[in-house]
Length: 326
Image 1 (cartoon, rainbow, N blue to C red):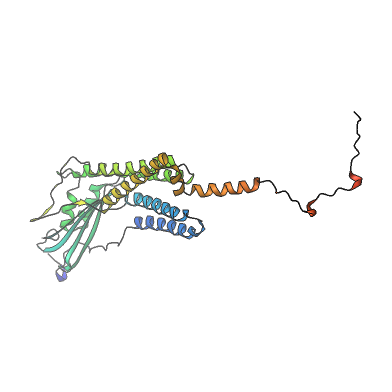
Image 2 (cartoon, helix red, strand yellow):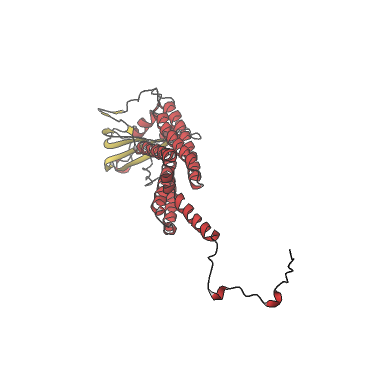
């Protein structure tokens, strides 16, 4: 049963995908605005500490932006496969498509793009999100997808992560994602504390908090990869959809290692060469300028031997002195 031009009944057209996630765009815009503000006030920093100050600002904003952004990304695990598969239920039409699976901390994204995009009188370009966050119901999202009549490849992949699936992947991915997200929020808090301590400046404790930030970020990766069940095979005929760690995973790993190196560097310099550490944080220049101003204000006046500087006292103001004869 088909309608005009061979289109299938009861199925709405494909909804267009928004080009980017608005949450990530807001976070990146905020941090870029902060960076632009610091660049504007950069010429007001005098001396050789200008470069060190700029590097500290860039490093601090980069770490904060990464820790906050990866909470909302959807590419912790990604996978693609090209296959010939049925398009929708109750239809014998076979299409050539690219099927993508993108796993984030808040849910699963399933992407379906046709080769070419226009096939069977439709535009095959789907990107459906199935959430498993605390307030979301994954099974309900899957049921809504069934009611909307989503293409069969999307429903087949999404079914693997339902609570009723024999693969048991839903609970494993959901729990690991929740613990990963919680650990990253803790890392964001410790990053804020380290920024405050470095600005006070309390360098030793700032380095400790930066080191703790690195430990939390690396621990989040362990929580994400700690799953007991094996990956359930997702097959499209002879083709298999396999996932690997995505950009968010490797970005978190690189940022955690960077914080680890910076934290260890601060602690080592503080114990072995504190003068160089103070130079990096522009503490020596401020101390030298303060000492110079203090020395100039405390120096006594130079004696003068010129005739104009001789103190003249009128005779009437002289006091009489009574001499006692011994």
